[in-house]
Amino acid sequence: MATETDEFEPDVGPHGGGLTGSISDWVNDNIRTVLLGPSLAALFVVFIYPALMLVWLSFQNTAGISSSLDPTYNLGRIFTDGAFWNAAGNTLIYSFGSLFVSVGGGLLIALALNKLASNRVRNTYSTLILISWAVPLSIVGVTWRWMFNGQLGVINKALVDLGVIAGGYSWLANSLSAMIVVILADSWSRIPFATVVLLAGLQSIPQDMYEAAKIDGATTFQTFRNVTLPYLRPSFFVAGLLTWMFAFRAFAIPFTTTGGGPAGGTETLAIYIHRFGIQQLDQGFASAVSLILVSITLVVATGYVYFILEQMEEIEI
Image (cartoon, rainbow, N blue to C red):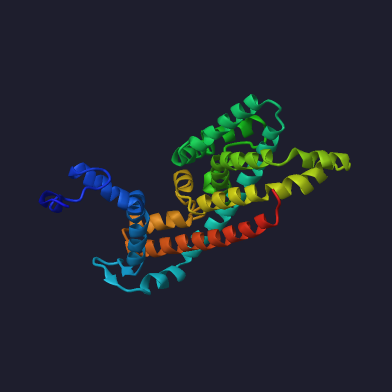
């Protein structure tokens, strides 16, 4: 028979009574909220809210003293501005140039490292190669700008000493040579990433495949074409996608190396956005261009990942 005291005794959870027990019971009953809540809040603050603000600002006409809602104004300005198309073309040249040089250079270095018999030596060289990846991009740009300086640059000094050129050449004063310089600078900073990814892919290839190719009498080139490259396709896809995405949105290296010059010859979309958003304070127009930049990146990345998944289904690893 229940007593009167038992009838009015408060419910006690599995973690006991008091404030601490109540909090523990709530956490236990809402464990998914507790675990995912901070991550979702950080995602909203860092990504979702800025993305929504970017879309909202892209619909604003901020060219004058006051801003006003005009959804088509910025798009009309973008597609009729010759400087935008120049920046878009430079961005494509810059990003794909960096992609080919970075992945190609990374492949050569990865193949060389993979031939080393000693794991300690291979790891040492891999660590040293990663040093260039750790250098801030702005410092990379400034360093390469001084290297190719027309008067004091070490490149001109070396070429003059070798008798290749008679005097100082202004590398950054010519659009073509300036574009080559910024592509090489960007590639130098991204080759280590491609090297690490491709080296991991090389080390994951079953040695039985090489032994079988050797027994069949395959040459070195045939082995590379029929064994190494097919197994490296997933690694190529990962290194290529990330390298292109970083280069397509690059700002620090071309800005600190050439500032977008000469005469817009190396102005990428990121520098174009900086010119309007920071220098001219036309944030609506800059947001509209940024929205186009992000949209292109997402579309290409989505299609690329879908292509990767299809290709990986065809490869037995």
